[in-house]
Image (cartoon, rainbow, N blue to C red; front, side, top):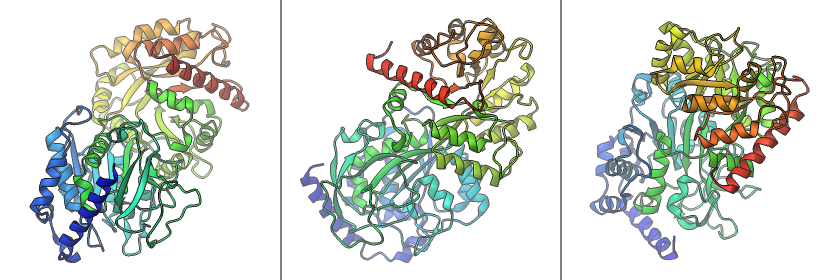
Length: 580
């Protein structure tokens, strides 16, 4: 953005401030969405219409619906709320990316209402929006199970008692990625650097930083680059901080993030503080940015979310390839789930799988299964979040074929935020399972043991047979160790399964026999490198490359580290030399 644009932005700010002078704060509390938009002047409406992007970044996978919730409690409401409402509504309609519904009624967060939407936009929502614990649980489960959440500016003090921003729902702040509203002047001039120049949401800025005037919040906890993927932040080397601080605006690390993305479970989270002034929402670049954010939150624009502090050259390479390396919980099944999470984080991996017969923790000595209470699951969510680890898969040996039993399993899968079940269901249960796969947007990958334990599924042909004519949400979980112990060549097997391979548990064995045990990847008889390269040639992107090391249970960490190094080295080599 050029200095000329910054000057115009300042003029726009002053003009909007003057236009808003006559509005009483109490009046905002009583306006419905249509009335709020009616407060915009003809000039403001025209500016918004002129700035709307011409087309979506990607074609929606289906018709998308965005809930815009703009209630403020104990606060008059930002003047930018109606401009944002209008801008998002027009963007969705003009580009075909989504349809909007605007509401201030908390009952919209009831499960039967919320399920109609793909994402929620909390538009500058200050204060304690609703205290009903059932509605909060519904909102939380909607996000964790795969919904989207967009927040701007004042959303960082949503679900606080206002004035004063007294915390009333700590997990919401953790989910969003920040709390507080410390700032300097409402038209502060800063230089902005792109922390992730090639990130899909940063496309509108063309890879370069820019200047801007707005009210920029500074965040303390729970904000952390260990939790969020920062898109852009204040360039402190170029910015001269002026104006009186309102609250604590100082960080020792000089890390003043302004926008980020993250996952909370399967939930796609976006936040940006640039939304205080109305002119933000007739700035063409900012509207392009917000359109990209909306398409990300709705589930159409794919974008990486591994936290900034956890990024390495290997993980960046894997993001390019569409790969996710994670620990299978069976690797650490001699430990509790919480200990397995800690070990996964210690290894520098952002992903892992779950296991139905693993104890949760010393404090929660229960199996990690559908019998857990909501409070138990909350502790699991917070543990995963604090470690910067996402749960992608979950092993349960049998998924019931009756509707009630099957729904209970899928409800649990939604609550723990997984993408894929690994299971060995009875073939006659698959008709029921298939319906729930599509309803819950969760895959079922059929796992293989040996011929005695898995008479139907031990061979890839058996898995293909039961998958014939079914949804692509049902496919294979390839356990390479059992394949090799059963005399099955993994490379031939993946060529047989092709796109029916949903997730994979990688092993390398010291010999091709029923007694074969795990060894370092690339040192055994499994042709691990060739197997991974063949997956790439076939264009398969598994839910997870699961690292399941089933040997020397209590002394396996050094070997696991070397397996990770093998995968990381191969990932970087493949991106460096281009597509195979």
